[in-house]
Amino acid sequence: MKLMVGLGNPGREYFFSRHNIGFMVVEALALKHNMSFNQLKHHSLLSRGQIAGEKVLLVKPLTYMNLSGRAVKDVLLSSRELFLESLVIVHDDMDLELGRIRFKVKGGSGGHRGVDSIIEKLNTRDFVRLKIGIGRPQNNGNPEDDGAGVRNYVLEGFSSQEEPLLKEVIKKAAEALEILLLEGIDTAMNRYNC
Image (cartoon, rainbow, N blue to C red; front, side, top):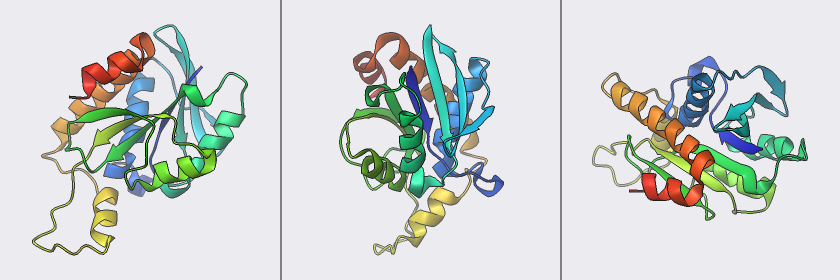
């Protein structure tokens, strides 16, 4: 069974935030394949189904972003059908501009606190990530950033000008996950890491 985890924060105030683009992607994938997030277990909302003939478990952790590792570990340990090799984490990435996506196998977190939490709880960096670009905040000429600007940026909503591109990238990311299931990580990376 493939385990695809979209990262985000629970709650209405975060629903449309940049940090929740992982949630948006797995929700779009579920909708496309008539799956619904109708199970509340392991600190997460779960959606089970089949995509491209493969059994899939889609997950939205409800632990808040910085504690995502707790939920991911609990879900992984909950079934003999789930393995670390089946794990795909879908998350926002400020180093990619909005509209771009990139698969990554192994490696560090790039400063993403949700991915940091997963690495810490699983005690490994060996899992697939699908990074969804959200771009960086404008620093208004201030080279010094105490982190508050970044925190505010990832928790703010997308602008009306960004919405068409947001819809496009969510659709592209859901399709990329389908290609991963159908043809494997190498094909998915060759097609989408450009």
